[in-house]
Length: 443
Image (tube, rainbow, N blue to C red; front, top):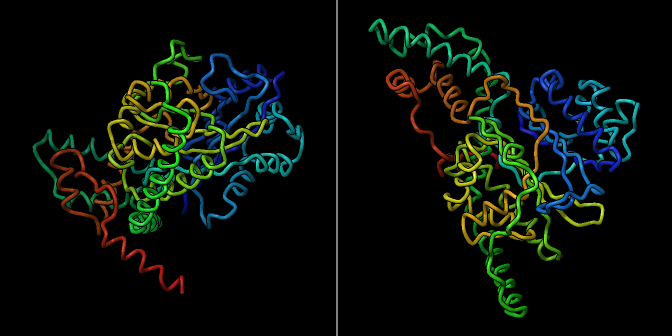
């Protein structure tokens, strides 16, 4: 099993913008009926993006509709988008699809399934960098729901036993819960093993990639310093005295978990900047594959991606999509407070217009003024919307209940009601084993 991301960006006809917003509002009320036919779909969203990020007034003459999905599938990584869209255009209600994409340039209204799929495929953009929490690289929505249900039922059972003063033994629990549906899928163990081996290989290659990233950064910084000396000192950064275009409620959901965020920025002109940005994003993308939980010390991000696309006048834009747990302020503060994460976020965005990182206030304001609403956001775990911590705990509890599971882990859960702290990434020994396992295939 592999995790796939899909991003489709289609130009909107200016005269159809009002009709599109109406269609998206309708789709939002029907999103669970629309997407529940995809058993392997984790998340999906539609976002309306304009080509004037950070401006007070939108550029209605140049706007885009973004469809983004996070899913898992079997087979190889080739043609992931093509396989997903072939199912998508046949499963989603054709009338809803026509109402939404009929507002976009070049859409074959009332066309065949193949024509609709071809149109969406032609407007697909690869992610330049992405972070996918390990839980989604190793599990399908169905197995995660079963693990959450197992945890819920086991917690109720343990509460009853504690009230009676009869703490259970791990052996008794394993025997009693051996036939639960969450424990009867042998393929789940194989998927987790393969996902962990992939993270271990990324950990092994981290050292040379980090060296390449630092070398490229020093070179780029040196060239930038020479350019600034030639052009003169940069004016001091200050917060603009303007109100953002959208309200906090529109762009910063405050739910306990799985809140969507969409952000768009314009690149500064220059071939060198774009080349360096793309190489750095490729290096960061590989680096983010090594984590087994969260992103370094940040454990509130479910999925995130950076996508480069060009506007109609051929100017590059950087689209950032994510979904996170907790408040928006806490989410951004975790970026600022975690130095490693802050470092590579700066690598991503420092070549975009208006980027300011002189203080936490300027960094937050720069992000805030470029946020855009997410009118449609679907998650496969409705109505629970579990956090990353909830998902990891449920899966670790499930694994500890297996005959080959960690008895100490299960004992700890019975005593405290939570699992032990999880390792952040594979050990060096595990990484070397994973790389050695590839040598016969390379030969």
